[in-house]
Figure 1 (cartoon, rainbow, N blue to C red):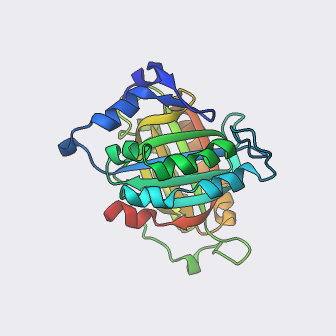
Figure 2 (figure 1 turned 135 degrees about the horizontal axis):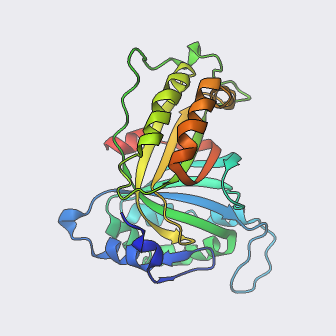
Length: 283
């Protein structure tokens, strides 16, 4: 992956700018070189849906997007949502405050492009256009997970300090990352690896599980920024996440290594409404 995509010609809908170079690559990748792609979506909604045909609307942007949800069109090209959740709290990022995060797995990159021309998709898209204020959509490929530190085994959530409760259930912490001076999104910079090794010792004691980490091959819709990785880490509760965040050893590692490695990021606590990420990586 290179920064060239950020300079390519872009055009698109009201809620983002299309990276036409990546779109062409997705459409023309030879079948023998194509394969599954996980499209990571960050969504910010209009307060009130704004339909392009001028109709009066009293529904929210979120409600319009719920009407849009193109399950029939996705099924027609062999795709399906594998993760969705509402943003509970955004901790890091620019002025854009995201409302929802979702991932759709497509059987091929071309399937993503083919869906755009389906009559069913085009009919439903008016609701997305009305509801969405801004979105970033990036194509991801699963990364090889780092090994657990020596002597650490996964902890059952019944044995962790902050297990899930009826009032504070599992949360997915989402990190969208751009690193300094990275040419290959599959390769994590040394400083980030050092941070991971130290933070993992804290996180594993609180029952943290890796949902999925994706190398971003490119961004099809957004604002021109380049991203390198999208990481999804599952915590048994928000209280568990806060305990990890405030751990002194993790705070030191953050200052010494994480902040050195990262050029830009969004970090969000997301309450999952759908989570079949693990199964999607093996099916």
